Image 1 (cartoon, rainbow, N blue to C red):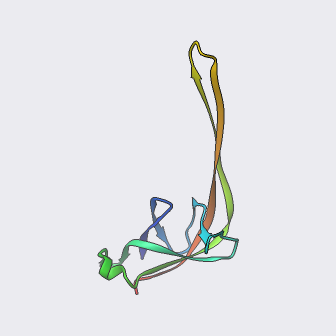
Image 2: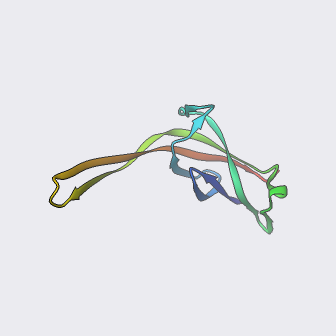
Length: 108
């Protein structure tokens, strides 16, 4: 059995026991701590020959995950420059991720 979930504006194909990095999760407005249980919205659930894809079928489907910890992505450095006007700007970004483990996929 596997499911396709949506979180952080992206979709991921997941199976039970799989670990993956998703954009920082929050529980009730606060960042999710290690050990927190999170319910994710399934877009598609496949169980052998059965495929659940419509909103009515997915109403009772559930994907549960446990937050393992936090990680950080690769550092991205940027530089903007405008010729002949002495405009220069350096900037950087490092994305923060939550590492989650899928614990349960139930079709409902």
